[in-house]
Length: 222
Image 1 (cartoon, rainbow, N blue to C red):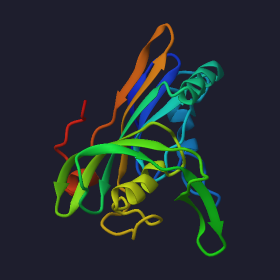
Image 2 (tube, rainbow, N blue to C red; image 1 turned 90 degrees about the vertical axis):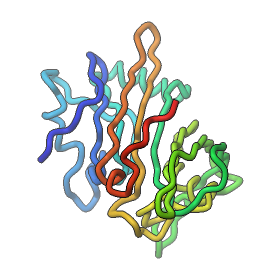
Image 3 (cartoon, rainbow, N blue to C red; image 1 turned 135 degrees about the vertical axis):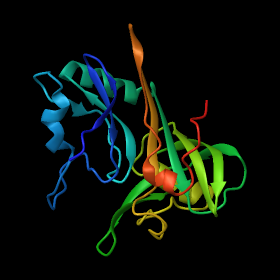
Image 4 (cartoon, rainbow, N blue to C red; image 1 turned 90 degrees about the horizontal axis):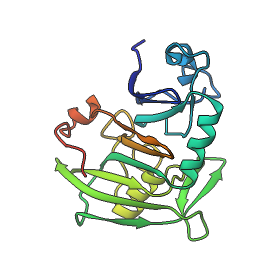
């Protein structure tokens, strides 16, 4: 088992580079999860840190953990107040018109016996806003920088398909699941503002499967 990479550390916070395929919570069917790494992440502290937010099992990159209950409460408040900047990289399975823009599509959760639950764009759903910028194109695929203003479930995955015209490469729910072994979404950078303290800042390296598809030389945009 490879050790988790620590991107940021202080007395109240950790930011790790979560590997793709590692769920944050233990799956109902069992199997490995971030919970199994609790002792590894203590790093000399008595308490194991706990995740402040959620990213999909397939998504790699920056994940903020709180080292104590007070920090968890403050960080949760920062997310609710939108005092957190999140930058994602996603590989879209097709060409994208334009160079940048904003997608504002409300999202709602639906469930069927056949397909289970998933999210859809719906006028009566919860508001969701994502800013995007085209970074590169390779062999019919497009690398997009996403900056979500809200944090809805599957927001970037839905906004890619409904707002940009194509699902993320490898997405088995909102696309056809081809082109990669996982949904190609990476939590590239995270900034969390803190009153009276410097902000938490972290940047996760480009993962190997992005490099394999030809997107390893893209710098994080300003």
